[in-house]
Image (cartoon, rainbow, N blue to C red; front, side, top):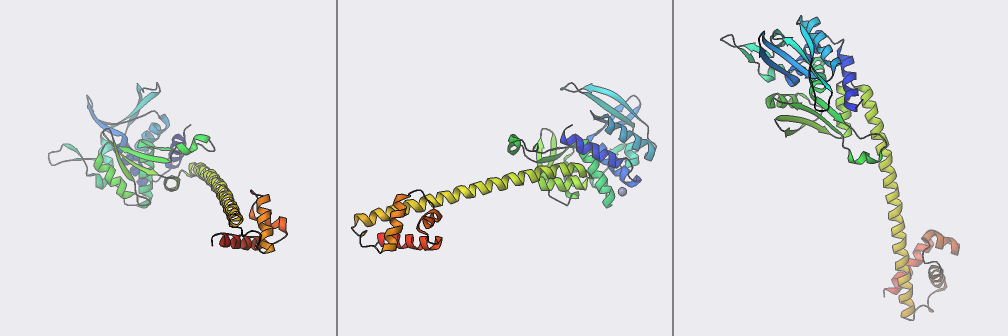
Length: 309
Ligand SMILES: [Zn+2]
């Protein structure tokens, strides 16, 4: 099961017992993002296509239980990948009962203004986003602990064929700003980044999926910290090597200028120790001479100062 499928399964479980107000909002989101209004011999009908029979069965049951609308699932097609695609058909009264379609002055069926479809109650708005994600969403996270993980980005998206509806949806989600993209004839709203996606998963009640994501985030931050620490060690080694090179340079400068023999004993001592141990760290040199690290540092500074005169 992909991560997307896990999130969807979890959402479906939590929607089954939703209140009537929320069930309506869930259905509105599903029909408006993934449904199509068709006209056939029996008049208008709404249909939703999906490869997920559990999803279609749930929306059928919700429509029947809460709105007394009949539904029927049939095998619709085979997708390009060879998986079965099913279609759930509802009679057209569903659109009117949900307020998606309205009758105009002449009695003709028209689509309602998209803004009127965005729920105002907090419970319903959550159900609405649950419906959007199940019907038109997907999420990708890097697989935990895999080498390739860094190349896979955190990405969550909702796809719409109705641009105006997409804009209204983006405005309704206030926890973060959805970004917009267009792909073929679709408008895509998307979120990038583990934290934003984790927030969205919590919002749509996909809590265990959120835990999976958090594990990935934690693994990743441990790995990043380890990288940062080893970068830090490398930087320290570079610094020590550069300092040793500078000191050796100063010592040879003093010798060249004929100043070496006249150096005070403590400086001569540390200069000889450095020449004998060109790759030693400051600490190691200090140990050789049984002096403190800051004492060694002070003597080297003095040597460099004399050499530069
Ligand atoms: Zn509600």
